[in-house]
Image (cartoon, rainbow over all chains, first blue to last red; front, top):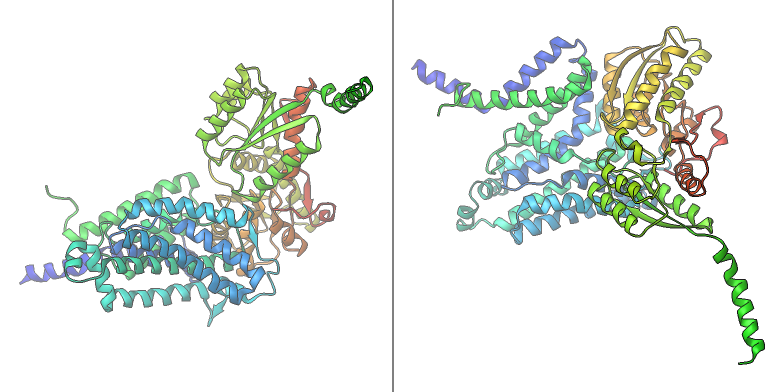
Length: 323
Length: 317
């Protein structure tokens, strides 16, 4: 009896290992810095994590479907630069949908290559990483983009606005997470994503359209990237061509930290959100504690390893692996 | 054909070709770091080409390494093969290009390094470094900030934070060192509370500033390694409604210039890619003409503040 109860607790905890790790780190940071848990600080961390977070939501779909997306960083630079440039040429109400269409076009291209042509996603998106960077540079002529009239446009709403005291980036992040969470967990499409990622061949034999599912996952990812670019552009009202550089690995780290398997077939939107928050709070907590920054890179890595270890330990009920 | 016509043709030819023959043409090759990656480098390239075209005695071979060390090394080798008279290099990597620079030196071709210097062990193989003096830039930023504090009468209690460039980059290290050394000399009672990197990135610097604002209730000044990061910090202060902070940057960007015009950003260091390009070309020409050229040939990067900004044109980048 007692054994059964213990097993049940372990199972429940096993599913929430990453959440436990998250709480542990929050407590440690709160003890180290009195301002860490202030409402202002929590809000500003979630707000600045929103850009990374929105991108991670889309990549979660791609990863669960058994593929990778390493192009999201430069795709985000692309959408940021495009929307800033078009803002002054077409006005915000036309610039935003145009930017979404162009970004979806890039996502569709990747989706077609990986889904319908069955090319290796690592190679396709790694290539796209530099191809899109080149596209962005060609588009902008290498120049920084800035909105001319920063005060006289409602474009700042997406990055700097507030609704009922809540910053808009947070609202966008939460709304998109809720929508995509339901899409993944509660709809036939969501189950197809898991099926394709879990066992692509079995899924095909069961009549699940593998190509179309993968294609749609990349479209979702591109949509999320466009939203991230929109927030980014609106938040700083100007940008370099390299604004998203390196984000693809941070996004992937957040998704994997959240527990999605690189091999596909597992992961949830909520866990990705927690992964994103862990990364955001580590960065913020280390800044508040004020350690010399060279060591922060090392500590960030140690914390990620600890989180993954804690997660896996809770899952198997012990700290060490048995051979 | 009559003798008269022949004579006329000969005379015409001599008149036309005379000047061309009299002037020895200088062939100067340049391999740049990564044109197109930012506005500074893009402007630098067009200014260089314009300066070379304006000078009849110069023929320029303009190459771009696209940020790739291997390509840059290949470009230096190809310039050596072409037997150009001088090579200007904007190093993609201060260490890795040294062997190529050495080959040029051994081939008797003078090498000028532009914008950012190569590592010290390569100094024997170059004739001159032409570029900005980042240490001086850092100390000038400290002076701008201190002068402003004195105007405000808070030079004895002011507290500042620093947002530096990408860790490990020479420019970032030198500017920070210049600032940190000079500030206590001019304003001994101003406290530099903390330094964190903004990685030359506006968004990252905004996040760093948000953390600073949470952590410190009292911040009087922010020094950023360039204006791009400075404007990120300014955005954070604006969003948090923290007024009265003195922002000083370096490498005046157009966004920084605009923020200065709006009265929200106090000052910076004016570094023009046009001056940078022209200085590099002039250094190479001076060497070829046998003039005495200093080994560290800095071009001037003056202070710019809200007070004197009308003397400067708005930066193009």
